[in-house]
Image 1 (cartoon, one colour):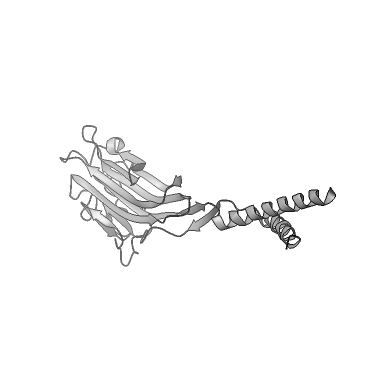
Image 2: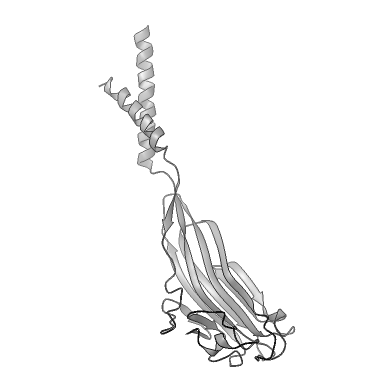
Length: 246
């Protein structure tokens, strides 16, 4: 048995050198967002999303997307999208105030001592009438982490109308990788805040929302124990060899 054990230990160590000592590995995770395209042009949909205020899914042929100037998005979207801050039609419609949002929650499951790296991507556009004394804001958040923020202070002070300048603010696309995220529940939220009054009137559009990434897990305890046992076996072999040489 003593002769067999050192031989097995050597085999285990050689196998580790060939295969690689156990280490943290990146494991891809699937798409975390449901309905990130908001349906399609035939059937726009907010299925899978939680809404607040004024939020609706529209086809790319909708007036909000096809209108020019600061009355719409100047055909920014080629397929279905979600609109925040506008009931129907071009930006000249209501409401003029309120907090409008869509959000979706996903869970990163617990893994042994590991973390997650997430890549968040989407396309957005923000347009309408801006006034320095009444600033509307549009942004995206992962839980409390702000991914980006825009405000209406740079938008035209006329309109909203096709004759006004088009100075729309776009993320085309936005992409950011967050590293070292712990397992748990995460909420991705898009939010437009229109200040009270009608000095400004804005709307925001969103599409192509995606959250993907990978997890980094630590070596399994069983793998580490096996490698440790191999080194113990080599130690026994060396000790036996010293005893024989005396």
